[in-house]
Image (cartoon, rainbow, N blue to C red; front, side, top):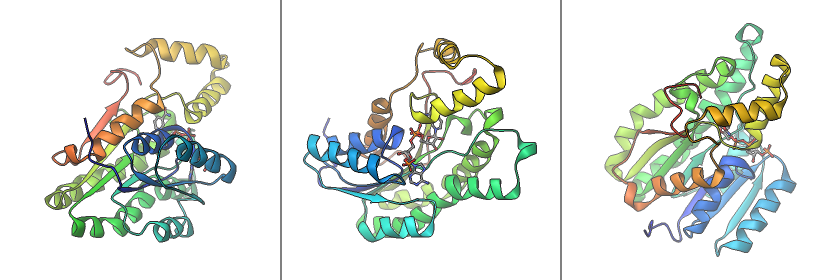
Length: 259
Ligand code: NAP
């Protein structure tokens, strides 16, 4: 299937590794030029070089923190008129809500709710004028099935989801869709750090936790960044203009059981 994306420009936030990188690579495979971002210059540049070497697309690699006004303005200056925006940032730390301060909550809300909203605000008007736009928010399976130790994530992502539910139904008249991808367990650094937290509190070895969790998934495994990216590329395609305001769960069928 030709996804009709060749020559378009995408901003893919937080994309030197993991799910963001999966989205960037899948879009590059479709001929989309990219702005990719991350805080660590070395890994970001390695990812940019890999993508440039593999696909015939332009890649601008911008080192910075996407959750800051400076990080966002750098990205928007590099690509003021993106056709595609993939919102992503690191997830908040796990823990017990009794230990969280207002500052912890503000950081989570800033990273996983307000940053995507700021970037949507800055780009959606141009997309509507040009009659094409695809916005993807990487959220979490926690939007459908909250995870107890990830309360900061549950709260911030639910807030973003509620906001988007309203505007996604306004922008679609101009062929601008806004959807969310909800990862269940994907084999990335983020999952590794969650296992480290559980290993500390439960005293179980990480490898045992990994095996048990994979075996407990109906697919018997974790998802891959490539699978995640493919779903992103389809939702960004010109074939997906009638899909908006959706929350697509990628979890191997775990929901509504334990994720
Ligand atoms: P990952 O493998 O740890 O990758 C995170 C990527 O984002 C890295 O490239 C990282 O690079 C970049 N990044 C993080 N914070 C950033 C910031 N403030 N500004 C710019 N770049 C930033 O994580 P992942 O598994 O892909 O997760 C992506 C998102 O999905 C997270 O919000 C996570 O909570 C959520 N999620 C993941 C899973 C899963 O199973 N993997 C499940 C549910 C939800 P630098 O560190 O160099 O900045």
